Each structure stands twice: as structure tokens, then as C-alpha cells.
Amino acid sequence: MAAQAFALFDTPIGSCGIAWNAKGIAGFHLPLATVQATRARLQQRWSGAVESTPPPGVQRIIERILALLNGEAMDLSDIPIDLADAPEFHRKVYEVARTIPPGRTMTYGEIAKRLGVPHESREVGQALGRNPIAIIVPCHRVLGADGKMGGFSASGGVATKRRILEIEGAAALSAGPLFDRR
Image 1 (cartoon, rainbow, N blue to C red):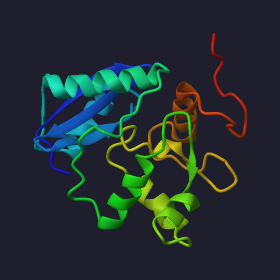
Image 2: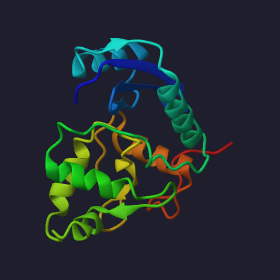
Image 3: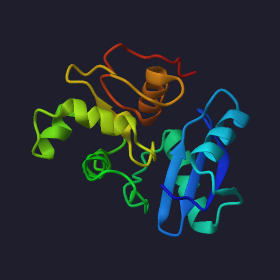
């Protein structure tokens, strides 16, 4: 995805990065071990993008992401995104994933069925594993057929996925609470 600029911002799960262009959000990166590592990954992935202060529209998106990660029910499905470089099947998977509200989940198989390809749940998982706009395209809300976490390609893997789902208030996570909510 082409991005013209990016910014880092602090969240309850660490320092995230967001990249944008004239069409919308081109990328979102969950935190790595350090702010410097997250910055380096953004610079590597969007080599032409310049770190800058987000314009007002992007700042409002950041505020909405922060609200979501602070436990507020927040629908991000109206945020303009640029997935022009993603394969068509991936774009279709991302469109379905964007319909899952905060606090809810869907399985890879359910997405495959909605796309009319019920035997391609593995391909759905592969598409979500390449999701360039995590949180906004909520791949963390997609679980395995048995309700288990499955994989998560972000730093921290399944623990990060579980934490985001708990922040959103998702019910019936299969292994019980992972974090003490004091």
C-alpha cells in the first residue's frame, strides 16, 4: 500500500503506528517491543512515507482507535482505507471482517461462507494474516471454528489478540481471562 505519511501514538497496548495517503488509511501497525522498533517497521514497510503530525482527519481516527482500546464500543467500519494493492480476495475478506462489531467475533469459516467459498477458511486466515490495517480491519475478531484464538500475526501473537478482544469486552473467550482488570 502506498503511504505518504505515518505517525506513532501511545495506546493501552503500546505504541502503535498509522500510515495514510490521500485515499485514506493505508496501514496500521500494532506495537513492537519498543517505539523505535515500531518506527523502523513503519519506515521499512512504507519506505516513501514521512513521519509527521497527523492531519485533523487522521487525528480523529487515532482518537477513535484510542477510545476503542480504552474499552469504549467504537465502530471503525466507516474509516476510509486504501487497499488498492491488496489482492481482490483479501479485499473481500477485509470487507466482511469490517462488519464485525466490537465485542463480537466471527469464525474464519463463517467469513468463507459469507463469501460463497465455504471450504476456504484457511485462505481467509491467510488473508487476515496479511491484513495491513489491523484494528480498523478487525482481524482480531476472527476466531477458529472451535472458538479458539487461532493465530495472530501482530507482535505478541495470540496474547495481543486476546488482550484486544478483552478490552473490547468480547464474551466467551475460550480460555478465560488473560489479564486481571484491576
